[in-house]
Structure formats: C-alpha cells, structure tokens
Length: 502
Image: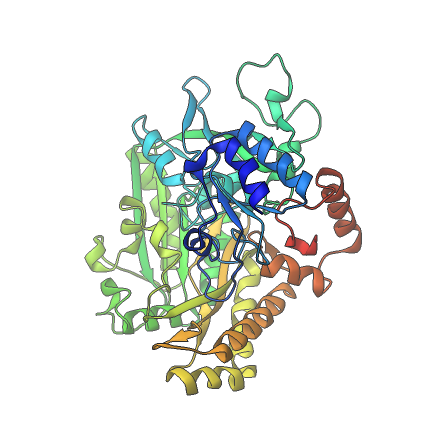
C-alpha cells in the first residue's frame, strides 16, 4: 500500500492522510460493540475534485473506498466490512456554501453536521424540516441522506431529511462529478427544484447507504420556525401500546398538524426510571407508557385550536396530562425547547457501564408496530438460553424492547427495537463468547423484524448483507439494484461488501 499512499498524499498533502495504526484503529469501529474493520489508509479530502482523484487512484489499484460522515450509525456502515482499503473521512467538508434567502434553500458541503447547519439557520429564524437523526449534533448531512434518516425534530410534520432535498453534487465511484435536479441544466445558476430535467436521479443516491456515489454537496429547503409552540406529555393507562397506535392514527385521519409525537413503552419507562434515566418520572406511582406531542402555530388562536383537538385524543382514552414543566414530567418541553430529540433516540447508551444496544431501526405503518413490539417479547423468551449465557458471564441478562416510537410523515412511525448487552471486553477480560452470542442474537432479531415487512432505512454492513442472505429482497428489485451498482461501480470500489456486492 506504500505506493498508493504516496499517490494519495499528492492529492491531499501529508497533513490529511494517515496510515498510523492508532488512526486506523480509531476508524475501525462505529457505535456498535460487535463489528470491526481496520482500514489501511484514512484520508480527509477538501472537495469533490480531490475525492474524484482519490477514487480514480482506487480504481486503478482495485482498492475499496469507504465514505464516512459522522460515524454515528449503528450498523457498521461507516467502517470497512473487512480489514483493508481506504476510509474517506468527509468531516473536513463542513462549510455552508450558499444560502438563498429568497427561495429558502441552503447549500452545504455534505460533511457538515445537522447541529452546525441548524445553528446557522437559527440566526434567520429558520430550521431544516427534519433536524437530523437522533445523533444529529455530530451526524453529517451526507450520512443522513444516505440513510433517509429521522430522529424527531420535526419528523412528524416534515418527514425524513431526504424529503427536503433539492439537489446534490455527487462523485460517482469511477470519479465523474455530477449535479442533479435543477442544476442538471448547465444554464441554471442556483438550485431551486428537485423534480425536472428527466427522472429524479437525486433520489437514486438517497438511502443508498453509500454504495452508488459520494455525496459532496447538498441543497436543502429551509423552513420558517413558527412563533408559537405548545408541548404536552401524558401518562397512558393500561394497554398503552395499542392506545398510542390509535392516537397516532387519529392524528393522521383528522389531519392534525403535529410537529412531533413520541410514545415510550411501559418497560422503557420502568427500566429507565430504575436506572436514573428519567428523573422527571421517578415520582410517578404508575410506571406506564408515556406519550407526548408538540405543535407549532403562527398565532395564539391557531395554537389553541390545535391543542384542543390533540388534547381530546388523549382525554378520550383516559390519559393523564403531566405538568407543564420539565420537572413535572413534561419531556415534550425538554425535547422541543432544549433539543432533547438528539438525546432521546440514544437513551439506552450508557444505561449501565459497558451496556450497549444492538438494535433494529426501521419505518413501519402505524397500525403494525404493536404487533411487532409484542413479537419482540416472544423473541426474548425463545432466546432465553443465549440470554442466560450472557447472564452467567456478566451477572446481568440482556434487556430487549424498543426505544421511543417516533411519528414520521404520513401514516408511518420510526421503530427502534432490539436488545442491550455487554461488550466482549468485560471487567478487564476479553470474552469471545460474548461477541459470538451478541452477533447471533442481533442477526436473529434483524431477521425477525424483517419478516414483519418493515422498511429499513439505515442498513450499513450487517443488515444490508443479511437481507440478501435471507432472500428478503424481491428478485426483480435486487437485480435492478445490482445492475445499477455494476454500471456505476464496475469494480465495486465504493463501500465494497454492502449488500454483498464484493
């Protein structure tokens, strides 16, 4: 690799490339405790032209390249699947290129974080329609687009972050640089419309999990932040799971303009309170499901009407409103005013030292998630033998269940379900058995959820390959995906191994 290293060094300078063992190991993991792939080289380009040169060198030498944004995804998507190759770190590309205040479109480099972008827009009284995934403080815009990411922060009103995309600059796997949407017309001076100039090629790179091109610039809609907002949190009665689904459905059927709404299942509330995760709920006599909503409006009258309609949905189902302040249990206020949605999504991390979630993040129809959540309980019982092996080593059994169920655009929710377990390095000793059990259980959980017909968005390493191996994709669909991959990336340089494209 020394020859390739020297070629790449000429592209970015020695300051932005490394083959140090320490740097390589730092880029060999993401947030999950199981998957690892150690690259040969880590490189930080500054723009599309440098990326183009890097990809041309990689093609000439048949070396895989793995694009990395914030590295926040849980499915191993931001590190090599096998040891070797080049990690393309895009975090150096974090500039705001242009803000079109007339058309409310902001163009940014794809390595910028959702946090930095929204901090900039807030000075104009604006925000992105979705404030990014649950890890949005550090998650990159390019990574979010690669995953159709959601995570609260306006998802019920505006949908996933790709809903607001106007156009992209993309470096194709063989090094060509393209612009999509309105900028496909060479006479267009600024991006203003995604649909036109032929098919929606922008959509080709949305949710591709990094296999079809490297996103280098993104143009996104910005939205005025309404002056008025209300947020309420409710303690649900028994059968909270079914009732929460009913309430979500009624919100949609009645056309209520809700900004965000989430449901926390009974077990999550109880376990979270037991371990000090939800101090605002510790004094609740009944540790049952919690549900909240947030609405925005341009006048007090409009806000009052929306609140009245939404409150009725909860009151009719015997839900109890908690107090107006965060200390009273109103997590909705914390979520909206203090941008808590960037913490809610990851509420199981660090619950117990060494305890990490191995989860499954998908979109599913509102009326389906209660049955999926009940099936997770059955899955847990069926895998007691493996769960107890973890108990024998660590003294604690893995916990299965779901995180908050997040309402997203249309009649869909974002469902994060899975289990928490200890990493293989536990109390000063490495336990290979823990890693094997965790991987076995994780694949079993992902397969189980897949068979409920959910729509996966973040797939990365483990899930993209598992879906192929269990035959989840319809044959005609996967053949088309394969044709696109082979046409755009004939040597499978980019994100080699995802979807089993070796």
